[in-house]
Length: 380
Image (cartoon, rainbow, N blue to C red; front, side, top):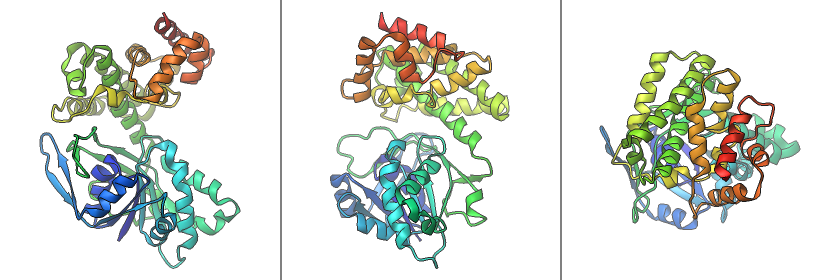
């Protein structure tokens, strides 16, 4: 069996690639980072170091690497004969890998089983977005490609922090992971991925993950940064920051309980697990790394405004989430383009324009007036 994985970065090697390897696939990594591709191609193996309680060192073998920018034909050929395609490139990059998949499907024999495509991104229905990009790229030719692939949305969760200097292609991760995959598209013939669980309705799991793990991680980063802390584990060790993160997650849990019917006890246990993961002192993760790209994280359907807007629409509390939004507006990181752009927008735009442009909410929304007040305070 062969899996083609787009995105050979830390998540690609330390999570998706590891599980594909353990499922018996030969993994063909595709990336545009020449140094990384060359290093992987020269390596016979790499190690995934799981740090924290229950962690193990896992040796990964049986992989190859291709540069999709330099040799797109080779990538298409691998897709044409692969069993599985996965991605970990970031939601905004999916449209750039769509042409490679379309080229591979065009060349794929109709005698092969459908290619199983799963985008493993921190976004709702990312695989649908990838398929839409492929349809657009193929144009009138999509009809000849459509039957050669099946597309399943996924929800993935594993903390893969910034890596220590000189780590090479080895990766340090936390022991915990979750990979939920919608089962329907596979019609009883799911891919071989040990530890993944297949569900009929993925939406609750996607939102539980995004509105707990991603919201909590961002909350720890922004509240920790506002308190002058460096590491995420330091932030969770600070009583005030920990209380702020807990308050935000209690609000997202209330939304998830009302919207999807999760049991309150189940959500309390899930929150506790998430907070213990963030507090793992062996994960070398920083508030600056986790807090980067604040404009994306403050956008309408993301981890802060998304749950806060839905909670406000239902009359649920949002004070904890809004405290995180306030801290996010104060976030600074000279090396991050979005953080720099946010500082410029705070200087140049009036509060109403900035609120609508960044959060996507207009004056008629029940959350708008509170957000406007937070933006006005950030501009003083």
